[in-house]
Length: 143
Ligand SMILES: [Fe+2]
Image (cartoon, rainbow, N blue to C red; front, side):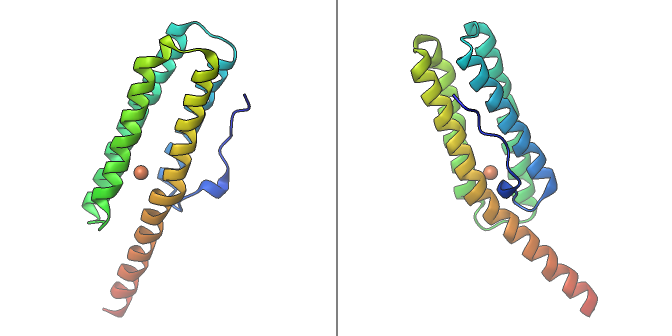
């Protein structure tokens, strides 16, 4: 199973978010490696729990930044975060019982889901945020 590395094309234009997204990608890559190498269940579970903690922390920070900025699509964005967190939790709950092939499929699915979210929902927020910052800078210059 080839792990997919972070690519600068995934950038949402906000360095702090890109940095965290890169870390989440790295965490998923470690899980892929653990599954591919048939690592003990406890080790894979520990990596999955770390990914879950990092995801929860990241989503909370992202949602807070969006709330403060009064981002108009906050609600659907938060719902997508919840869906990803639920899928991750379901994977953690079931993965002990599954075969390697199924585990590979599940982690690939999670990674693709995260990538889709970054390239669509987060990129939309990044563009909106940058646009808003430009408008505010222009307002200040005009004042
Ligand atoms: Fe997000």
